[in-house]
Length: 178
Length: 323
Image (tube, rainbow over the protein chains, first blue to last red):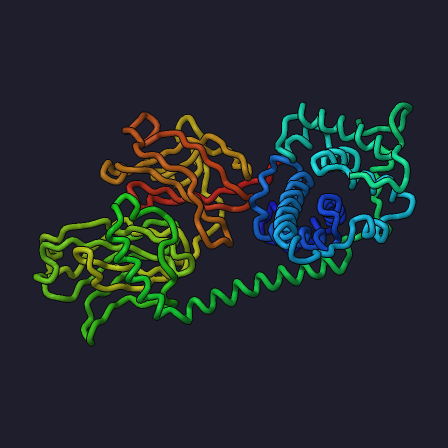
């Protein structure tokens, strides 16, 4: 981000941000949307938006927090439109999206699959708190500001998410968890 | 809570730190795709700009309609610094001719430079009875951005220029524009288009304005004219800054407004406005506080307006905030 001081070399800033945070953002988009093609689109949109509006970064959060928040917004709007598409088309045709776990199987390492299948099986609001906490190592305060929730809400969500995940991990294999 | 390498904490919390993916999913391919999208976006904007100039003729016609519409709007919005019409034309033209007759000629006094108030002389060529009793108003439209400035808000003509038979030397004192590039100056008589000219404002120097002492303070700006408290600007952080203004009482009455342009940028941002600046104080002819925030680090030119007229500008540097 030191390039921003000069304010002009947007290409250099973009390269730096992609290098440093591209993987983080892609994974976050995947964890939220559970689709690789959606994650591709979301991350591309995030970086294009960043390129256009670099000056909008106000230094109020970390760069990483800012980018994660943008990724979350765009993932949510993807989910929203995907949901709308699904409900409106449901009766007419089979939408036929690949089942998330099939994609997980393809993308995830074998030794990580059980854990991450369970994480992705959590409802969105618990999933995101848990992921920001344990995968990204954000503090409760950072998570609260990113999700625009109070720290208390984040703490209680995180607590409940851990409980749910523990139950999912204990559940016998082959049982379909919703 | 991050160090989970202790007993009592489930093993999965530690394992969640690692990426579950077999391969880094954000690949070099993805990066290249984003780079090419960025380039495409940039190319699209450049093409759009070129096209704008080509359709200048149509734009001019549209602009006339827009100006007609502007006449219908209340006066208090007329000097807002917002884009109100399309770019017009891209060549300097100081005279306006209709049906082979020259109606006016416009001459900037001295260097016509963005950010500095300018003298501007207009030589009207028709007999005085054409102008007598009418109200002249002049605005300038920036070709690149469409930003509009009021140069003369409305001046009733009662007598010819001194020593001449008609309005041969109509002089305007504070005709500054905030951005470099082509400006179309449009002259109206009683609200009806009379003529126009296109002047090119030079790029100003972007060195930081000088710091001087106005007892007991350190001030940045132009001594005897305009200054702002000499304290750092941090990008994105709003802060309180005092202003010093000096001038004739007639120049200092009316709304104060500060806008800013970034070096290398094309537009203006509004920083601050104040409806009344008070009266002469011990420190300066006007001395008042403002809250200013520059959104991006780099060199900025802050332009000060009183009653819609450019009083002057101050070049400052906004620093990157410390993490």
